[in-house]
Length: 121
Image 1 (tube, helix red, strand yellow):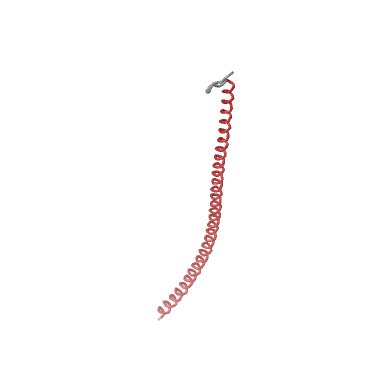
Image 2: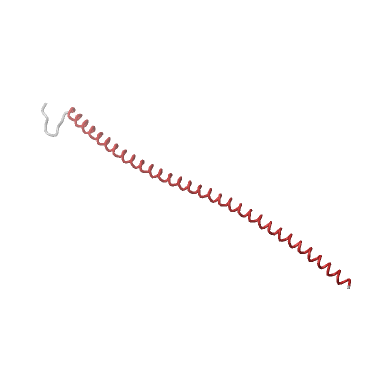
């Protein structure tokens, strides 16, 4: 068979199409691999960022919890001190009132003595 320029056989066309499609498939597969790799790197980066943020939030929560516990302990100590001071104040007031009442009795007794001595004269 003699081929004229621009003519080709069916086998030749099939081979050309096969190689053309095969090369295109390899290029597509390579491009898909590159895109997949890029996407995986982006996902990995996003995952690392999310993990970093999570760790930061957990650290803040632990710090806030420790601060809260410390403040609660401070409140308990302050309440205890206030209760002790209130008891001291109540005791001091009771002593002052008792002393005042005793002094009042002494003054009344002396007033009665004075009144009695004035009546005698």
